[in-house]
Length: 99
Image (cartoon, rainbow, N blue to C red; front, side, top):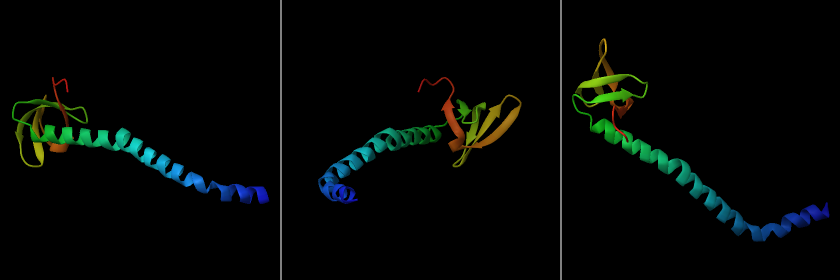
């Protein structure tokens, strides 16, 4: 029992290492998860803001259509058998764009 207590008391020098390790883990978490998500979100927002009449788009649900009109919150798409109104945020990409 006295060895266990002694081992816990002698760990005082590793606090600095623990803080460096924690900071490193936070940095890795930021660069692998938070930063790419912000980049994707910014690109999706730019795509939704740049929609124009006549562009062919694909929704995040996989529906392909041509933009008929757009207002602040939604987009009216012409699909094969009619029309459908979707949220601007539901537009996933433009058809034919490489990005």
